[in-house]
Length: 333
Image 1: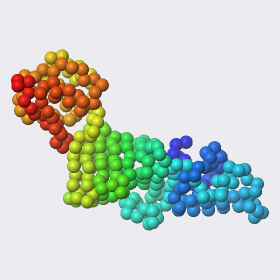
Image 2 (image 1 turned 90 degrees about the vertical axis):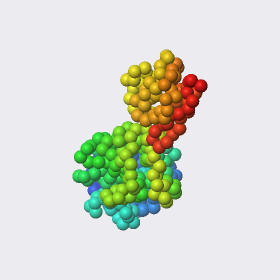
Image 3 (image 1 turned 135 degrees about the horizontal axis):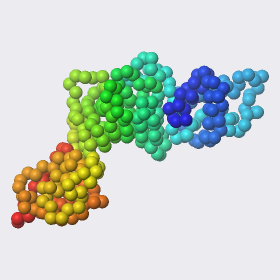
Image 4 (image 1 turned 45 degrees about the vertical axis):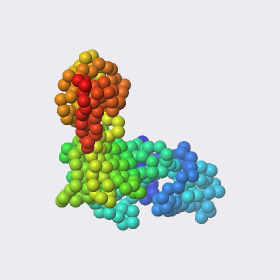
């Protein structure tokens, strides 16, 4: 049973709507997963506490059943309940917990908060996967709507989204919205941070300022692989750039020379890098026209490759936005 199915079963248990088989599963889960000392959120403690205490005292002669319970279940029932490093729970919409969210009034909303030291994998009902980083939380409806797949993020997560052109996937951080059809990307938006960052691994991502339902005067950009934006929450400015360690967008084997070159014009080497990483490389003058490059660039990062090429050709490069600009004296001098 995955986490999505587990939370549905737990929700039924807390509401007293479980089958006998589901009840046995929940109790067996507590038995086989010893409780640690990590606290859950106060409202969740209250709900779980009331539900299990009710169960423990039900159908008895009003004698505290703790006396006759196995130690593991007594520990669960004493509830200051702690369910490990993180907790997965569906709750009905309530103003105090879902203020400002744009879900339907009839939606049950799932909130996941990762209080552990490790990233947590969260499968979604559409087949997408979210890798939630530590000290982060995400909220989403139990069932996505007909028009979109909307989630709210506080903190950092990597999203691997199953493609569905009819139903865009939308990540809202409150100040910035990321909209995709199907791709993989990272969003970093901690409440205490002055900025929000989005970077793309595969596909195309639309990123714009404002709430997810604000369709007027959007301050935004389109991101492609190896690009990122940093949005300043105070100034509302968007800075577009290349990620720190660009990854290949096509296999090296599909370029003319691969990453091993023997007396190849520098222009052709740069063209190979452009194709491999999907990043524009602009030659600002003709200083590289007579330059040839020999070398093996396999196993190096993109910027290490650029450094080696430029050193051999007596040129330099600089980053400007999502492009690289090459200039210098070249090989003739």
